[in-house]
Length: 304
Image 1 (cartoon, helix red, strand yellow):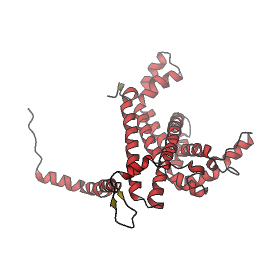
Image 2 (spheres, one colour):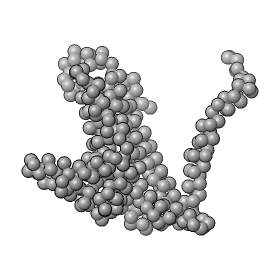
Image 3 (cartoon, helix red, strand yellow):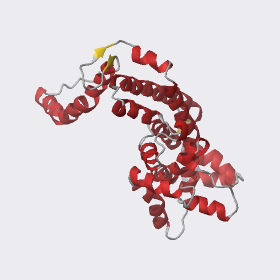
Image 4 (spheres, helix red, strand yellow):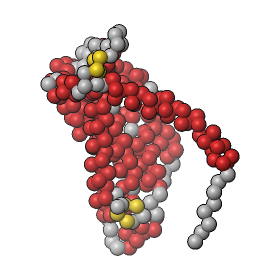
């Protein structure tokens, strides 16, 4: 049997001392507010008077709140459209930028640059691009004789407008996919060619399984990002004068939470909305994690 080596107490104390800034930061900025929000979610609290404990009434109120269900519907609709579209576009761009051609570093930089822009600036830019009267996209559609949607000014095209805008900031996903593609062993492609595999067969049987961990990571992060979508909806709603969109067609869950917390000062109800969002995202993430055993591969082996 191996002899257990006990660390000197001084060394252990120094270790805790070095990580104490992280521990203090986690308690003060993460664990503390998390516990406080759970307590506040069981109170009637408007910041101007002491909180009054009301138990689970805030959670019960959600089921009778039509805007709660509407915000969930809008957010799920956006997630169902944006996450697959963004994943596909980011993967296609990564494959294109993984080619060995001249000026490829320049092309990679150009495609990644939009991801560095602040969300507020991106929102203001897309208010102009998707302007029904003089926006560049509708001008292009008019030139080729296609219909020009009203985008953020009609309920039917509000969420699709946000989906189109989301493609603009795919630089981070693209870079992650690109890193995964560059780690695929060239020997696997050579073996596939010897077996007579074409381009599609190589992609389906070699590329996709080998980058499945990267795809899994981007999928989880995409779900989290879709359900926390806020800044663009807030800025565009204010910039177009539609608030949460025409007929609340742009009432995303995080935007509704913000309205309850900082416009109506219903901090208890807003905290309950936050915990409901946490549970929804956690359940969706767990479903993705559970399904990963069927399609995510690590070193040629299916994940357990």
